[in-house]
Image 1: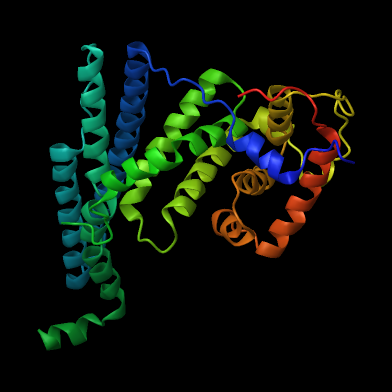
Image 2: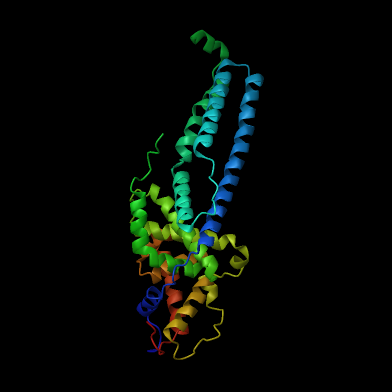
Length: 151
Length: 178
């Protein structure tokens, strides 16, 4: 049928559609920034509670698992939790979005986004947790007697 | 401690991607969200995700493929999260059986044709939508596969029916608006 829309015309129609004017009133910027702030704050709180529970668990292991290797593992893990708590305190807390002029709000929002992006979860929060649990688990594999002989 | 995979030029790459593919990202948002306010939010989410993702861009694919992949992933999640809207979506195979009220109408102008094309796309399930949108953006089967994860053979199988549906439903003849 000659009157049909050809595939190249379909692509042309799609790619040359009129663009919508970008609009972002100051109140919208603030709303987005507050939304972001709330979500991030909630996320950080959840992580903090989970970390506190896990740290309490490892602290109790010091009592329940008297083996020296397990104790070293638990202590290393607790040290990792302390390090994380310090990092959160230093870099994690979200700054409150104030009702500043729009440009200031935008700049603050952008700075906050950059700060959180640069707060690398992998290097800051994961790496310190590798040695502790590994040593702790090793405590179950290495016979205590043999270890004392090594020491 | 520095993250070894972090891309030092992330901000520069983002600026390049936003300048080059900004219009295409708007079209993606338009294809996934009909409501103008939610569409603005979705577009911002896409830009935010792109900005963050470019930190880990290791140039294993082109910036174009990466940008589209991120945009489609964010938009598809947006559709899936809005479950009520998701429930009404259909696959390419099913859409052929859904009647178009204006089917066969002669002299459809450009803006009406675009609206109908959008309506058709917005009814598709995310994976089919990704394929069709990439096709409409002028990508080849290999690039579409890179974005969507669908094999090039399956891409061709998905594109063919939509071409025939559109050809049948959209008849040219009206005024071509700028």
